[in-house]
Amino acid sequence: MRIVIADDSLLVREGIASLLRRAGVEVVAEADDGDGLVRLVDEHEPDAAIVDVRMPPTHTEEGLEAARAVRERHPSIGILILSQHVEVGIAMRALVESPQGLGYLLKERVTDVEDFVRTLRHVAGGGSALDPQVVSRLLADPRGNGPLSTLTPREREVLELVAEGRTNKAIAERLDVTQRAVTKHVTSIFSKLDLPPGEDDHRRILAVLTFLRH
Image (cartoon, rainbow, N blue to C red; front, side):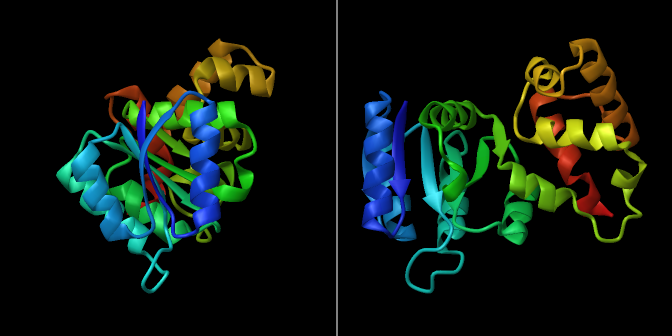
């Protein structure tokens, strides 16, 4: 797996690169701003890019804008967004545009290198992944009258784990229930949120986004 890293902090950038290289991941280039990211992705065509949201010159959403440019030019390249904060607005906009090949993680909560690499490979392969804190904020519909309000507490719990990219087997192990029970919950969630049959991985993430349309 070939990766490009974009972060304006030299220490963060080099730290991520060092961890990934020790885990057997090939870091082909590093950028300290959005323009550099786009240029390096064009040059190296990696499997995925790790992108900070806030980069020069304004330190607002340059990273996200660069990620959008990368996706437009190279749709098959996965984007793993790393943020210092739970920036729900940014996460929602990025996910609504297209959840395929997109991950959103919080820097401070990346504590297991194997887990991080696994998520990176999942995103590079076209999957989706969300940090649990981001999921919780996305699910916290203040109006309380959208389609998510029809879910039972257990279904909401299952949906949070679904959005983290976990399989039914992994969810069953986490909740100490059978896979059959998880399958029933997931089927019920899809039904209540009126999600038609489709590619399951993407439909699972779209379940989290349903309330954005209401």
